[in-house]
Length: 484
Ligand code: BG6
Image (cartoon, rainbow, N blue to C red; front, side, top):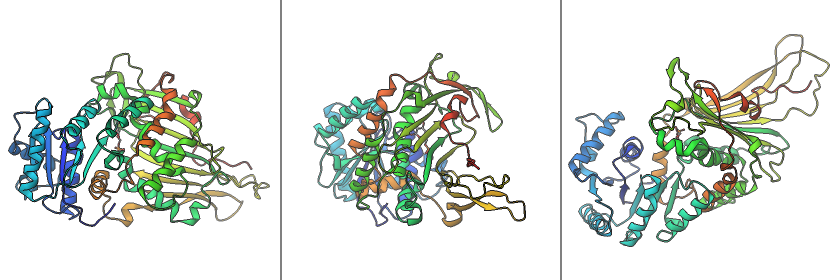
């Protein structure tokens, strides 16, 4: 993330009246303006289908969204009034897009902007290709300055559709203009994986099959489908979380050292990891679907009772699997991925479980049970690191106990920026490091597509539990005991 004041531009949000705009984009832009990362005026033009909306009603809507996010007071200074515009896109005909082009030019003239443009697709995935093509047809794929297009996931639903989607985008926008968002990459703790690995010789030197016995990547959520039942029922945990967020965490944990800290050098190494993963075996997958249960002592309904979900749905809300990476660094080290909704608590963690010492010199002492070392990186919430190691319990007989060295972000840093703040600024400054390249998204789909058609039936698990017991074989017990 760059911190110099970013180039002046017009930020166009296609589908700017939805949840993503009010909950994520608008607060992120507001923080960037307040922090000085975006020079004023940071001008936003939202498009939508609502003909009845005007600049004024949109500004009131934006104001309310920022107020609800606790960022402004109702009578506070109003950036929305100075810089937010709304344009009704009608039916999305070519003439409608011509009108959009004229509106863009008019706003740019009004604010003296140099013609740099971001087109952010805050749209359902089926509207994506038609929008990109319409922008291209009226010449909005290039302008007086730079033009960038931003795509939110889901990026395709299998290997073939991802290739097709990339092809259709590339008809109008080249790869250097295309920013595919996986918001996990914008999280500070996820970015820190590279710093942690490649700025600390102490860890990088043991980051391999000689020293590591297994790696676990867990993204647990306590929320359910949060009113998105219809979308989720077509998607499931595999497509919603594994193909993108968990795969990103996998590649950053397993990749080789890039030749530089440049976008393509890093993305090349991530793609190589995906190419080295052995074909996924359905026997190494366990799925689950939550039934009713308790979250924080509150009763919650089961997945099949969620609005928008088919009453006999077999969509998985939990997925656990083992992946094997066939390269010199990782051969023989299982990577265990696990994600689920309605878990007891929200936590995203990567645990690197080290091997036991080859031989225990304490083997004559039955009481001296050793446990393997582990490094637990908590990416959210309570961000930090926890390195677990063995110490001798003072006094006799000889006993070992696991203790830990901890680092918490909250103790060292004041505020972690939201992922969208980082990502939006990178789009505007033209840094593609934290965005998913076309070949990367295709490789991730190539890996999982063969199993999508033969996924096992999900096992039920009660909301508020850690998933179905059938998935237990795909996890490593905490504090693994070493042989005496
Ligand atoms: C989204 C998924 O991409 O990520 C959601 O569609 C999920 O289902 C969300 O809840 C999790 O993001 P975070 O940042 O809360 O971990």
